Image (cartoon, rainbow, N blue to C red):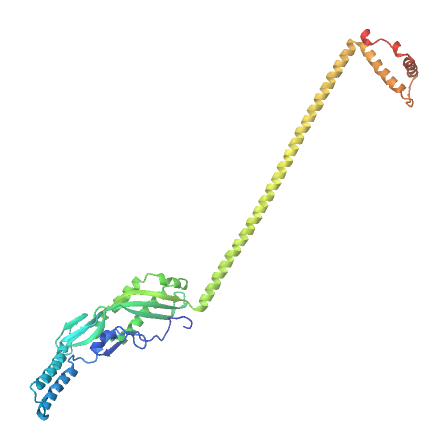
Length: 396
């Protein structure tokens, strides 16, 4: 799909085989072609291993020496060493050309299949081998692990959502004979691609879209064993199966992001509301504590006022008792000393009269006749010199 690398419904063939000379097989297995593919099978262009170039060259050299001796005149052509030298040189070329047909060099990491008269005989591994010329090398098959990309476009999940999945399967050809004589590399590419996609689609149908992103961390051992059992008759074994990418459609991703954003916003709103409620509860608790404290203070004030009232009452009662005691003692003294009490009373009246006499503006209000007589006697008394004052109470 557009914007999602790794997903291509028209993926080109990944597995291929080439036909090149046997001596160039090592280079072919280590270089990619124009499409970026490395061949897994090489078929030699020529089954015979005799180097006809060297054989023909040697024969031509020998023939040239013979013709030179027969048709050419001169000291070189008629010399004793000319013909033997050319003959030895030609025979050496022919021997080298024939010797190469007995030697088979298999590149490292490659197996070679041998056949005699068109019938398979055995498989040889990497190295230099002595093989009879009539035994042919029919195929060279790589032993390396081969990565194979398996894209699945718009696979349905358990909840009917189309998703794109890309997986990487690594396999190795463990039985070259079965692989070569059962199927070609190009055909195996299509068959293996279909098997892997079927396995991935079955995996998707057992997964909901919410768990698609978790596929990359899922254990794929069961799927790997299933694929290995299905392709075992081709001589291939699965080494590893891993999901490299799993993405739902872009619309679903946007919807899921919006849903996640809404969830986050709702959680933030709930947190803010909880903070507001907590603040209100704290304020109410603080106000209640203040009311309780004010009530406690008022109750303490009332208690103190009640204690003060009780104390004042007790003080008044004590003062009343003291006054009653004082009056009782005074009454007792009056009963015991009536003359002294009378004398004390008269002395107080005398003091008052003196104070009034010293004030010219003072007015004396009298009542009945006895008050007038008393006032006159008081005047006479005040006019008597201090020397003629009556004796004090102490003098008797």
